[in-house]
Picture 1 (cartoon, rainbow, N blue to C red):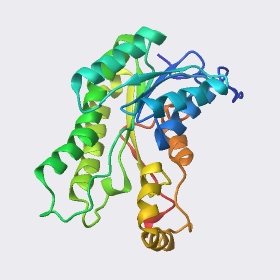
Picture 2 (picture 1 turned 135 degrees about the vertical axis):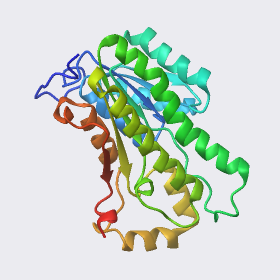
Picture 3 (picture 1 turned 180 degrees about the vertical axis):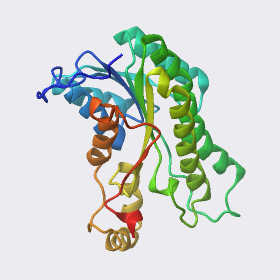
Length: 265
């Protein structure tokens, strides 16, 4: 299967993904919402999956108001039954699955390695790592049945480096890159490309809530950003959508860093 058809149009329903179907986890806000809108803008029909139904419903409204097609799928990505049902619902609604953006994740608690509780550690791994693995476990068979597809997983700049007081999160995002590379090697010859995006600090609702409580932390972090600002969700989403496009047809097993140059320091 050729993934996507190139077109100069950017209006919803007539873009490079016309006739294609995208599944986005964590689609109820932030990067996932932006990706849902960008997929739809380029013509894809979108399954917006999240544990936050109200957020997903708002994303769907935004897609539909712009002329696109989308629907809500409730899914806890740490549960196999939910993820299997999520993929099944997408195919039942739209008939196929061409692109998957396994984006759902949590930040984990900011404590030292010793201070992490087993419960906190397990929850971070269950959502950030198991959730990505389960996504691919059920997305790949559907794509194989169709003849191909493209998957993008969300890692982080913490997946290529480390940061104190984030042991579980750092471990989880390194693991996402490992899963991405293994799947890319296993299924590349079968027409499925698997890549990852590694965002730097991004203006998401979760981060905004944290900064509201710690404005000094926000100021300090901005000072060390090479471009003098944080990333926007649509900038990360644009990279993920590009990785699904024909323009990235020779990109496989790659962790694309989108961080304004932070890890280059």
